[in-house]
Length: 396
Image (cartoon, rainbow, N blue to C red; front, side):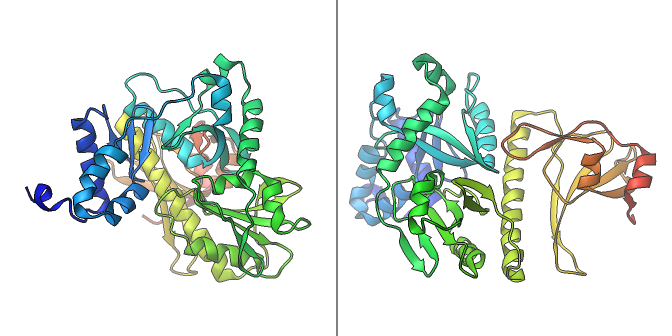
C-alpha cells in the first residue's frame, strides 16, 4: 500500500534483487531465476547484473522506480544475431580468471535442468583465460563450442576477429594517475579485457616492459618497470580498488615481448609484498570455499578438505595448510604444506603429520588436474613409514 501511494523506498541491493526476481516471475520474464554472490540474476542462459541497475534505481524519484523495474530492468530480451556474420560483428574476447570458470561450470550444472554446455576458453597467462561473448546492448552471451562448430569456425579464428572488434573500441588515451602509473580510460564493461592487446597496453611506453594489473572488470592498470617503485605503485592501486563487484584477480603480471607472464617481485618493499600476498590468499580461500559449497550442493562424492590460512605467532608470516585425512583423499587447493590426519573409529585424532607440499608432490602422491582453478587430486596415499620418514609428527 505504501509503495503504491508513495513509490518504492531506498532498498538495499539484496532487497532490490528480491524485488526484481519477484516482479520478473510475476511478469513471466523469468523461469527459474537465482541470484549469485555478485548480485547477478541467472535464469537459464541469461545473466543480468543488478549492481549498476540498483544505482540507477536509487537515483530515480520513488514514484518512478517500479516503472523502471518493469519497463527497463525487465524489458524483453534483445534479438540475438542469427547468422554467424551477424554474431561475428558483435564478438568480444573477455578475460576470466580460473576461479570464475571453475565456479561458473559448477553453477551451470546446479541450475541447468539439462546437461550444461562446457565453457570454451583458452589460456592467456597463468590463472587468466579468454572466453568469447556476443555483446548485446543489455547483456553478454557466452559463445559455446556448438555455435563455433555449426559455423565451421575455430576458436582461434573467432578470437582474431573479436580482438579486432575490441581494438577498434580502444583508441582513447590512457590516464596517468601518478608518474609511471596509468589507468585505462574505458568504461564499457570490457576495460580489463584489453590486457590481451599488447599494442594497446604499450601505448603508455612503447619501449618499456610493463607491469599489468586487472583487479576488476572495470579497472586496468599498467606501470613502467624501468622506474623505481613500479611494483609498489601498482600494488597500492590494486589494494585501493573496490573489488566487491566483478573482481578478476589481484595478481600482478609482466608484459614482455608481447606476452603476459606471472610476475615475482624482488628487492621490493616487504610490507607491500606481505600485504599483496595476504590479499591473494584471501581470494584463494574465498573462491575455494565457494567451489567446495557448490560441490556439496551437487552431491559430489569427492572430498574437498579445509584450506587453513593463519598467521605465525613467531614470525607474523601468513601460513597455508591443506588437510589430508588418511583413508579419504580428495581434491586439494595449493598450500605450503599438508597436514596428514589419522583418525580412529570415533573420528578422534590419533596422529598428525606435516609435510611440505613440494615433498608430497615430488613423491607423486598428488596429480595436477586440468581444472582452470589450480587443483591437485590424491593419486595414492602415503603409508605410515613414509610419513614418519618425510613428514614431521605434530604435537596432539
